[in-house]
Image (cartoon, rainbow, N blue to C red; front, side, top):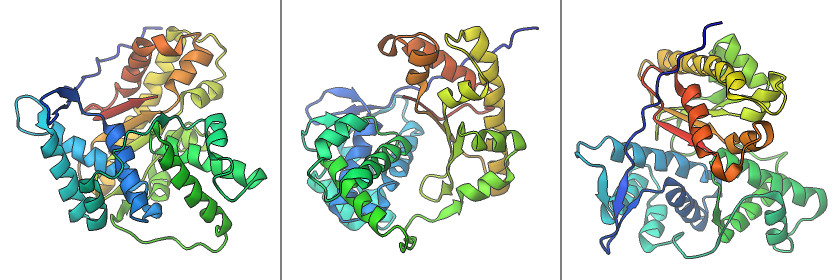
Length: 317
């Protein structure tokens, strides 16, 4: 069988931020996102903690598509852009808190792992036993969805308190209407994507988020370990085994993008997250988590290779 030939993944230039002191540092979307989540929580808008992800994507997309020859922006420019966007989408109180520096403290950041969160939160929320475990699971699921790999301790405490109340009123809770509106929901998308994509969704390999008005995009989540299980691979997996399978999977993802764009009659950037890439490499490819960046990038490039306009943002965790 002839081997697949994979087109190179086109790397975008790193957005840089010039600090007030003059230092130039890479733009870190994760730090901005956790700061915004802190502002939403401080404003009492716990039901809106998923919005910061779209806000960060919208800001980063604007910076990347600036007409400037080099993507270098002042810290003040970034702060004003975020504040203006918050005000435009109807969150002036969050904008005020953001301007005041809420969420930008120097707390020690922790990772959303079960053991760490259990030790940190035990005794700080009013539930125990099975309900406490469910709260921890909710936090970990939420952090994975929002692609948060580290955040201040107070943020996880606020999330724990929110999920504690949410679980207690789960049976009677009504959905909360908020800005921005959903242009097309996840369930709608799942109903019209190709059958191959529906099968991947049913197997737990693929998740497709709905499209919102804040940052319209095709947001895909792809799980490598479940992909390997469904293909009945046996560790240690070689690149020769996994890359042709990923190429075929990438073709399915590209078809999903086409179908969504067809329904909305507009081109959309693609955000592709692989939240367990390094777990897969460690458990299935006999790799070292800390030294597998090149392999992760190569597998990510294969998965992205079928998108005609490329992938705007590839998150490998």
